[in-house]
Length: 207
Image 1 (cartoon, rainbow, N blue to C red):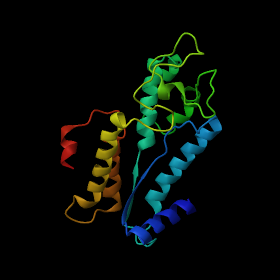
Image 2 (cartoon, rainbow, N blue to C red):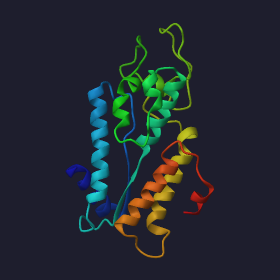
Image 3 (cartoon, one colour):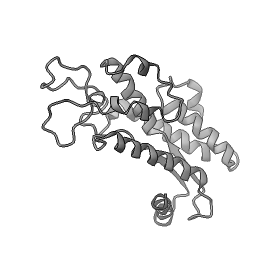
Image 4 (tube, helix red, strand yellow):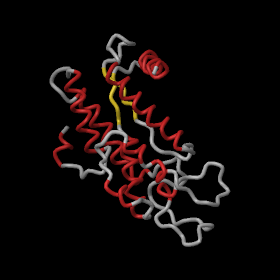
């Protein structure tokens, strides 16, 4: 957390930023084991804690907000895993609002082609629209990711951009400086709408 706080302070010192938005980390092809995935979820938990606990005296940063990008990508990977029939029966009823659900399905996120020439292969749920009967063949692509590292702008760009605008609106589209409680409630509303698979309500565009 010390490095993250230092980064926040440096951003203010060099760029003069007083409001900072930090995205949580998504699944990627750098995650090669369940232990790696647990570390990613721990980092995301740390990001949330820093955002909630940082004080305004630290580098004169006024607000640190969290964009739950990892949550959006995790939900989409799970839905694609259902399409690929990678889930056991009990895994199909995942409650996305339950904290830590993504750790319980690490085995799903980490399913990869059994034969690959890539050093850092992506998972099936990241890049496949279906699984070939011959697992030595490449699977047909899907508009989530092409390589397990880069996310398709056509799929995620709209929600990513809208969520940033919404989060900044929590600070700047108000008549007076918001309290910490107001910021967190607004942050939650933005993430619930744009960083999840929920249908975006029309009234959210007014924020």
